[in-house]
Length: 441
Ligand code: FCB
Image (cartoon, rainbow, N blue to C red; front, side, top):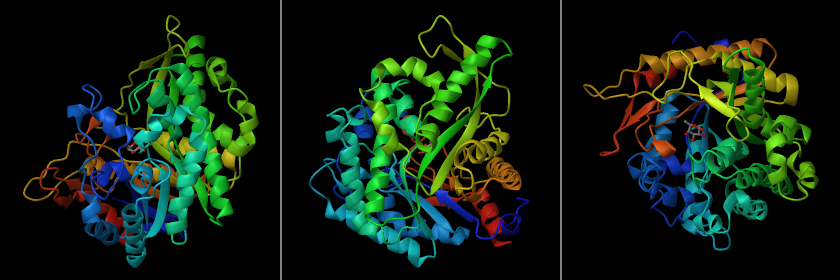
């Protein structure tokens, strides 16, 4: 990998990311059921109906996993704290074992010189709250706020940065409109409510964190570079609708206190009454913005379909194991767009970027030059964004470990480190070694 630390500004943080449900092993330590456990239990939702009950068994192997980060020479670790592990019913009783686990984990990071970047919600909605409507119920903001206080009182003194929500588009649209993720709904009213309540919960969490004296508060949004399928006006308008729903709704709510007209055009009739009054809470100031970026898509018009009248049109660039086109220019584009249109000089972090590949262990090693090239190309895009004036402060590769890739089960391998899901053996891939060498230069 033709890169070194000195190619980036002083203090730029390199890291790797994971999320609780994808690695920990949710059956351990008194964690409560989540909507992913029950979604995965229905045939057809998840490849081989796999769930996160064991995952990478990070719950027991966390010290070795933190050593992998330290040995890679990264500066920071993005992890998440599971709501259902800390509060198994989502409200009320606190699971001390869960709090103790995160306490040890954060101390373990600090002992290894790793800056803890915590995410408060990476998709483990406790089942007891899913029963009450989960993200479609306005009360979710207060429930989430209470959880945020409990976990922050325990570890907030030691985290370097905290994000409220991971990828609100996935939490709401992917999960309530497209039905691909838990709770697997396909309902526009549920979608509109989830899209609003997830931001209300974010704003509520920002308020609770500030009241506790927490600083360095942000949110992690995902972006997908959207291009029209053709120059025809209805395809151009389709791409604008897709961009509004995916790339603008959440950042405009937060940065401007409003929602884009192209998205409201379909969602407004289904929004909760009085939603406008929540925009002040939603747009409370934050300290940093996390950008997750993987790929691009072409949008075409589908006039015979209900709103948003969209059809996905395949592109022809080389693809990852997910079938996602490799398009580094999109990352540069979103970083400069965020700075220019929304957040100005506010620190930006690439909180996720990475690729899945069908990696195999041969003679005790994994050779994945495709991933090293992907990483180098996307870090190049970050450098160009910085040169263009975007205040990018760090980059987290997704993911440290091969893990539970949601509806794709354990089939898609994103890790710098290979995990054998039978023996749980970890094998750093050649991309891990190349990344470490670049960081040491
Ligand atoms: C993101 C998620 C993360 C992982 C990657 C591949 O949408 O935040 O958990 O699944 O995609």
